Structure formats: C-alpha cells, structure tokens
Image (cartoon, rainbow, N blue to C red):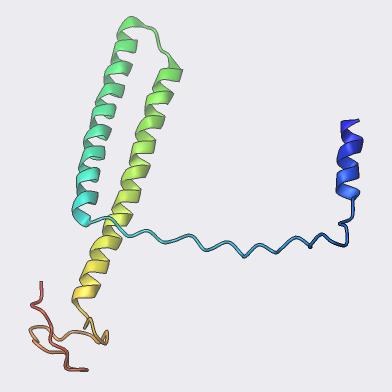
Length: 137
C-alpha cells in the first residue's frame, strides 16, 4: 500500500493553479579561511612534536615489556604505530601551513601595498607610484 502511494505521488502532475517549483540558486563556493598566524602554527607544531616523541617512547617501552613477558600483541603495536603516523601527518600539514603563512607575509613585505610593484630595499617611497612605504620589517 505504501509503495503504491509513493508511486502515485511521484506520477502526479501539478495542477494548473500550482506554480512550478522554483529553481534553487547554485550553491556558493566555499569560503577560504585565513591562514593562522605563524606563531600559533609553531606552538601547535611544538605540541604535536612532543606528543609524537612521547608516543614513540611509549611504543618502545611497550614492545620491550612484551618481549620481557614473552607475550607479543601485534594489535597494540599497530594501534600505537597508527597513532604516531597520524600525528606525523598532522605535523606535515602544519609544516605546509607554516611555510605558506611565512611566504605570504614575506611577499607582502616585498611589494608596494598600493600598486603591488616590487619594493626597492631601503626605499621610503614606491618607485612606481610614489606611495609612502612603512619601515621594512
């Protein structure tokens, strides 16, 4: 009975007084998020580096203890190793973000904020447009 009702609803044509369904506007492109500051990225990277070192020590201690007791559990070793690999993947992502944040900051400092022309080292004014430049970092 329910399947017949579903077929009926799908096959039903709209009445003349019903308006056709309005088209939905295309979805907006996802907004780009700003890069975190390099200091924040470095702090997070230090934390993950410490965590990675601790997990490696834990893994070594676990394997040693398994050897001493002659009870090797492969599932525990795989679980800890997988956690270490995921931490290393996050470290790689942080390294990429940090490189992008640092290069973006240095590119902005090397160009005129008004016209985008390359900045002459030590110049107080832009050679292209004459805009006053702030002190170089």
